[in-house]
Length: 138
Image (cartoon, rainbow, N blue to C red; front, side, top):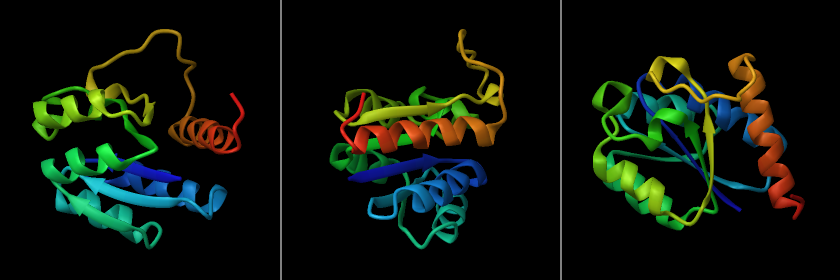
């Protein structure tokens, strides 16, 4: 299973996702894609995964992914202080991968019906869903 982790800003959330994925899905191929070099470097340090940076890296790797995961802002053009380009958001929307969005209120995107819980709990829930997906469970 090829999992693409996308993050921007400082890459802290992406790093936490990479660390949890490496722990729970040791056989998965994890690719860290940052909207900037700092985010990419932070995610790569989190698990010895391969990394790439920028718009084309997002577009290309999403087209090759089985799963894409990152903060909800990666799915919206111009979010994350403008780091997400319209082309990135379009590539994410169009890719055939299973998509997991971690809710973050900093993006000014509010999703109703989502339980208030810690970032760590949201990441754990997403990783558990990816594990079930890998095992063929719904």
